[in-house]
Length: 505
Image (cartoon, rainbow, N blue to C red; front, side):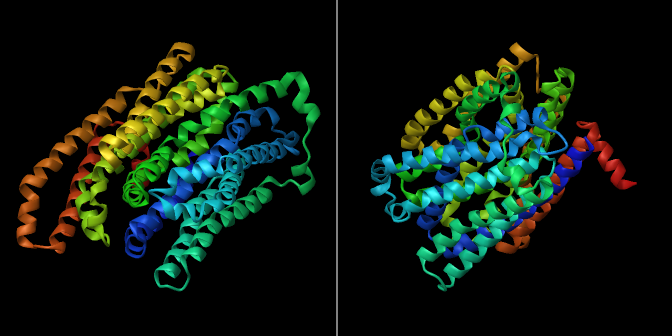
């Protein structure tokens, strides 16, 4: 767990540095210089590219993590990195062909309510390619237990480059066309940086990267296992990208301006899921190795640890966000334009808590011999997301899009966790998780009492923005501190208590 802890902490620091930059960029630059329609444009383009790239992976990233323990040696790892480059290239070719074939139909979907998107539709294949190989090289670094630099590139590098593009456009140095090119180019730069980093840490010459040991791949029918697994993962990869569908549906049904409001709310809720990006990336290879060795006691231990700490951290973050949401909308430029996204923050925040604390179960299933069950599960998830987005957006607008994500994930995880217990006797739940929920519910009650008694008194002493910010700061410090103290006093996590004791010493 030492390597996991070190890399997770460093990766989390990179994530939160990126969140800090993204916070400033989104709430004090984007909301000031971009219209809601332009915000929606960037969101739909990125979400479409991420969805297309997830399909183009053809399950190769999950396959690399699952089969790397079988290929790993002291030399070139039998060319598995070459396979990890070749398979996504084939997937991208298929996606690009589909894009060309259905180009007119896709344009027609957005032409009425999102006309601005149609002007830049031709850039989606390029952005998809950049996003695809950024993830491919990041996964390669992950199986080598090195995630800090790729996380810095994804979470910090892209955001800094985009910040520069926003400022140049906001101060009328560049046109909208140039801005969109720079925005897409940031992902191309991230791809190149990750590629050079993986090449350096692998210690492999270029010839080894391009060589694939086909004899080893074919040995013992290994290629059949890899092919079956990869084909199934092509479908299951959609699980992590269900939230992207909501913005694409919104763009088509409600327009880019509404999508822009949804984007700001989505960014706020997305902070909840940040810790899992690091812990999940570094824990997956360890879980994969434990599943390969058939050590189900270790698998259960790892899953419960990851699930507990993700629930603890994600709920604490969500709590701090929720109690300060009014102050946040009051501070950001043009905040009144985005205040309608408060319901989205609540609904998506709960969805993010669920996803970050239970997604380790998806990894276990995918790395086990029962991975074929992922296909019908993802079929249910995808169908639920499509149907619910189509129905609920008509009823509740942006809140309907968020609700579609939450309900779809709820259905999926109920089925997934039932299957894990039935087939593998793996359970993610523990009494400690119930303690976390109780602590947060009590804290929400304290926040309600604060709003009734303390907040009016503070606003009376210091009316206006000063009182609002003072209220937010004191509330975060005292109530957030009370939650942390309760977690330590109740010994919800012996690991957290031990880390605090060690930091005191």
